[in-house]
Image: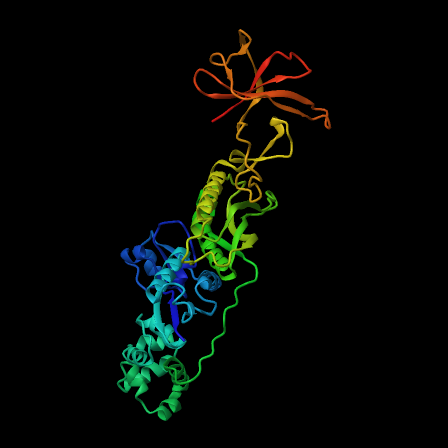
Length: 484
């Protein structure tokens, strides 16, 4: 087995997402637990009291630690990593991935680690990566001194070289044991492993020895696997209220990346998403939750594409009230097995890229302004085609239009003047085709009896003109369409 550990040293801070660029720190038991780089530059240090931090750096925002949010964030990161392996273990400060079976699929160890780091960064997490043959060794190395070890001998050398104090802190050993080991001269983990085991066990080191045996691979270390939920629905509470829909883009990123991982794990592609907007409720303003429905003409599990569509929709959306929480829900998905990581190019890749462009235009301009024309079962030209939203999955034309007919028709036919018995439109028109007789509509009371011709003017442009038969002025010519 080969374990990849993702340790989140800034988890308490990252679990409280905000687009505010002010310096921040997290307080626990009136002491600074984690501080951002800007806060540390302002003079805030770890372990400093909250009062001292407030006096030294009044502009630093102090946040109270929320373990429940940290657990939710770790779970979201695990769902995002489900694209790389199905064997995932949750930890209080990160996740463990068993990646022995994933190396070949993702192009080797280095490529896999680059992709894992990029996915974590997209989730809003800065992680330390470590690799080892055992779960305990990978987790310990990631917390203390990130390194990579593919074989047991190198793993043991790396573990023995670790400084003792951070190792005991990572394993949550009691201070009394740490003081005892330092008193007898232990400075490295290898010094502890060299001690007589019976004596150390009698002095309260049984739990430490058991953890080291599991990390070194001397005893079995079964892990509880993380189960990916059967349906995707992920909430996110905002740190500050959002008065503008554009402010929600930052928060949506933390929902879309786990969605992409979930879809990859299930071999699915999203075709319909629902973003619920939670408003503050009170007796005076009992507002219902708002929602945005996103339909993808080309089903996708690409986080960048889905995020681009959501960004366009949010920038056009006007909030009815401030938003305090979001929830992204997958309404519909289609199977996409074998479409990711393939070596042979997909013949339909160009069509999918074009459909993705139509989805983005529809999100920016509105679905009602981006239309696709498809034939209808009617011979009358004005009813022979139907306009559908271009992003609609079922709007693909069933057949190509006739080359003798223009694709776009005038809203209303225009009567043409005549000169020496010939129709005129920018000059006299010359008929290039025989009459195409259309007689239809008797069944719905909108009878059409016309003879259509393709005509050419002095400017060499082609027109589609007709004469009425048996009704109105049978000698009059009408312009009904223009060829491209």
